[in-house]
Image (cartoon, rainbow, N blue to C red; front, top):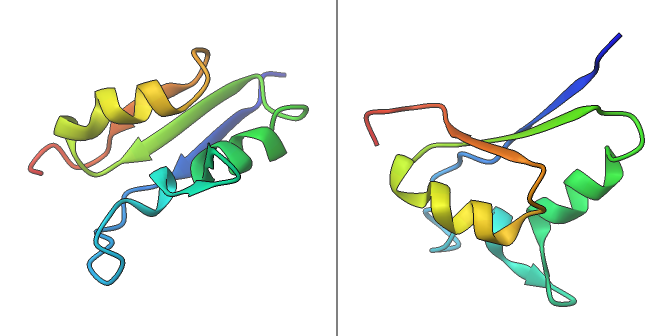
Length: 75
């Protein structure tokens, strides 16, 4: 059985002022820590963000085997 991990990273970050998933901690984006945590249990890793415009930014921030999708095409 294939297992998919879907990481929801589509918050507006209105208080922080930048995408929380892209904030660096020890030179690694926060979203990558979540992806690392599911590495051994998920065959497929998907990061769902809220903006098509930010897809490439997230793709560059995560491992190449991770799918990045926009879950709200209106943004």
